[in-house]
Length: 576
Image (tube, rainbow, N blue to C red; front, side):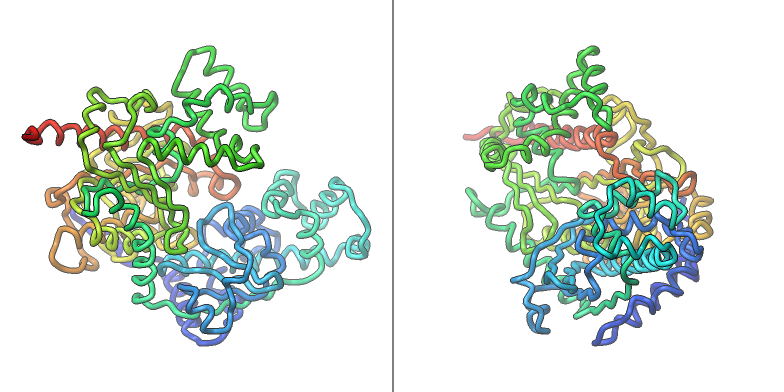
């Protein structure tokens, strides 16, 4: 167990990383084509067809899901860390349109013409952004080169109206794609498929990228702005730092389990299930009702809650949810400090036991009325942002009583939907191997899920989703590393600095098992099996399929917190 795994990435990936960081040191714009050769020859597992003439639609769709719908019009990307940086360079981002992506919670602004402003909160944003835009450009230009050979392109660009079938026929024939790959392009260009195909046929892609700054100081300032926006809500009603259970997960699971709005409106929400639903929700609803499985019905209502809120154009339902949550001591801050890392604060003393999901209604929960502790849940950040956020948060709160990390990961030995519990993690950022005691075991999760739960796993914290190849991963797989994710290592580096009176080391084996003065748990659910079949991560989200695993993990975390706090309440001296 104490043997250190290989300490560097694959040489070709190292070269790729050095290439884009050295080029981005320039104060001017760098053309993305300067990254293309290093990108193609690193043989990324997510972009296996980079050097082939045939389009790699899966890689393009993956990149498209992490870029905004305006991307076909973009020619320049400008990356910075604050409004002040952008405005100091003449980019009036405050007046630009806010644009979103399906696969990343990164702040983006579009000038309406051709410039995309990208906010970066850590070095991981750069490691993520550069390969994504490079893959986009490589595959766009492949497809453009094939489309211009088809004589039908002239008619398409002449303004003639085409039916969806005609457009799909043109794309499929010219690019030699099957129906599934054409469907992937539909998904990639979800905002405006016909318009995007016309742009794809009209012009090649020649993006440029400029990094305004990328200093550690600015990353810390960004985390400071983030915490400064959260701190008033944290101190509200008390004025003093209170004990905290820190959770890194998502923004829907804890409010649904603890707040109870979807539970109270379940019948109305489930009416949104339509016969013949593409995800099979109607069959799921029928099976759940037939078996009397209350947990499956609850998960289905949680999944449909967003659709329920969006179907109301007045905003009254959303306001009702927020009011309902506030009564249960739950407050949500969507973008504190202008960072897309939402925060939720749950006051344990205000929880209403009657509103709890039955799975988290632990015995004696009513005694929490005397607790002053808070659950501080954040929408899991990307890579090194996790280090910056936990470090800054720890400086501003009272006693930390637990740290619980939950998120998606790729698995090398399991199946999509499996749950993995690790007790060791190799971190590519620090090159440390962290050994720790995970407070969760298989038995804590299995009772809440139909998925397989694998404990005693080993996690590999990678720098970016494109920055691995099969040769590199084979080395780690031989060493027993089976979970690929992006946050555990940075969180453990932050925890090291909460425990030791010095900065975290590099390239060491670090034993944290007996040193943490608080609970620590890490749970991942598998969204991809990249080295058996190029499947979910490249082609689609987990959607409803992921609800079972997601809520099993969330239930385990909430139960752990409530039971730990109840144990503390039992040990506390009676009030005089």
